[in-house]
Length: 275
Image (tube, rainbow, N blue to C red):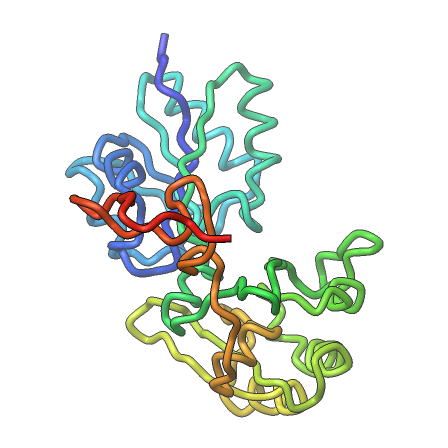
């Protein structure tokens, strides 16, 4: 009996080198790889071993996908389902896992780098700034897929925290209006199209110009919208309170307040802490 679990692997945002080491190793061993052809960078498939069966799942429905995985697994194959970004975010993996587990297949998830984190890296952005915001919301605007009560974009913006908005570039007017009411119409927004892909783009706009920018640039898919006080601070070059973590007067488990680093960079005891 095949004891290899069916692997759900995060491919990352686009750049083949941003797949995890665990994900790359899994691809190198897989016999069957089902990948979302409309989303996954085909260069990532270069990590697959010669002779592996590669199947684009874009034209397949749920039952066809799971039947193919089941048949291959029962034949003793190492089966891998490759999702863009991280499988746990907008990956529609729950229904796949339910069917496979009902049929007795062991499953395991290997996480990936989601586009919100890749976008922050491209921008040099920290979402959580001391005394400004300590929360990041990953969400989407309601569209063909509705959102639960209380999770509409207007409700979520009341926290005034950092926001990464997925799958919403086709609703620029509504998203811009809601963000403008929360952060102000001239608050800056970062738009990242196909982040880390060779043709990826970074655009800046404001809440009031979001719809026009998306329309002019013909961006209605593959674009993540970043908003909130951390984005504003970065774009406008605002001064941000320094973290207590590296404050010489702040003690924590790795350092006594007022101490100097000893050999190897470890805290020494030359300078006693002061009240």
